[in-house]
Every structure is written in C-alpha cells, then in structure tokens.
Amino acid sequence: MKIIDCIQGSDEWFKARCGIPTASEFSSIITTQGKTSKSREKYMYQIAGERLLGKSVEGYTNGNMQRGQELEAEAREAYEIITSQEVRQVGFCLSDNGLYGVSPDGLIGDEGGLEIKCPTLPVHILYLLENKLPTDYIQQVQGQLLVTGRKWVDFFSYFPGIKPLIVRVYPDKEFIKMLRVELEVFCIQLKEVVEKLK
Image 1 (cartoon, rainbow, N blue to C red):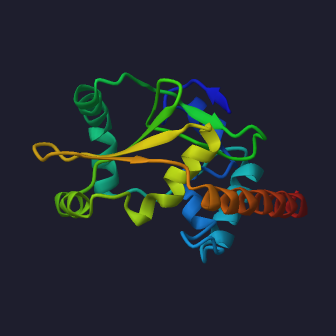
Image 2: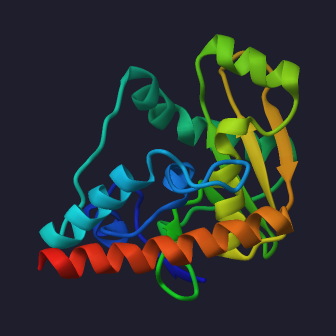
C-alpha cells in the first residue's frame, strides 16, 4: 500500500483519486455475492471520463451526506475516547499495483482501520438493533482491508446523544479473492475504454 498524505476533500486528494476505482464505489463493480454489479458499466464510464478530463467530477451529494461529513471529526474523536485508540488520518491509500484505492476514515496502529458512518437517527437505530456490518458497506470495508492489508477495520456508526455502534470486521478471504479478480478485470477494461476514446 502507498499512502498519499493529504487532506480528504482537498485538491490534492481529488487529484490522487482521479480516474481510479475507490472502495466507496466497489459496490458498483461487485455485489456482496461476488457477481457483477448492474451499475458497473456506468461507474466505468464515469472513471474513464475522469481520466480523459484529467480531473475528478464530483458526484451526487444530499443533505444527509453533507451532515455525515460535518459530523465525521466529532465521531472520530468519540471513537478515540471510547476505545482509547489513536486514529491516524490519511488522505488516500493506493493498492500495491496502483490500480485502485481507498480513503479510510483512519488507520489505527499497525493493524487496524476505521470506517465512520453518521447516518440518520432511524438508520442508526436499525444498525444498533442489527449489531453487524450493514450489507451496504460490505464491499467498501472489505475493499479497505484489501487495499491497506490491515488485519481489521472497525465500522463505527455515530449519532450524537445515542450510543454508537462499533463492529470489528476481519478480512473475508473468499470475498476479497473475488473482489481482487473483479477489480483487475475492471481496470483492464477501463484502460481499453480510455484507449478507444483518446
């Protein structure tokens, strides 16, 4: 893994991840069952377009997403207090082959990672009741484990005034194997699309 130290959301961060598949969108490439996602082609064209433009084009954001970004620092601090763990913030982590990456919400020691979500109140309550990694984030969290080579990632769901949820997630070797293959195929096809359009 290669770490690019920059502030997430900065021009340097957008430049680092431009035209590269990122873990937050791995669900657009592969389903939780290891099958090809229906949104794969659209995501490929998005990244191909970024490569041709030489810059990232910001995607859709809504009020809930904005709220989550605003609460992230507070959530990270709460995680540090609860776990007595120091969280190292990094900008972007590239895979060893440089083909895909992840923007983790933090790295913990030499072995751990952190994925923070600040959902709406009803969603947070649902997460607490289910007490597991939500299905929507399996590809992202397993992707973080794949890219960083870490031994675990803590999924941390936070809503101010309500108890948080911490779920420690370990690598799913079978899923990571399927994910790695899908990513390599995706990146080969992405390169071919870009070459056709140059």
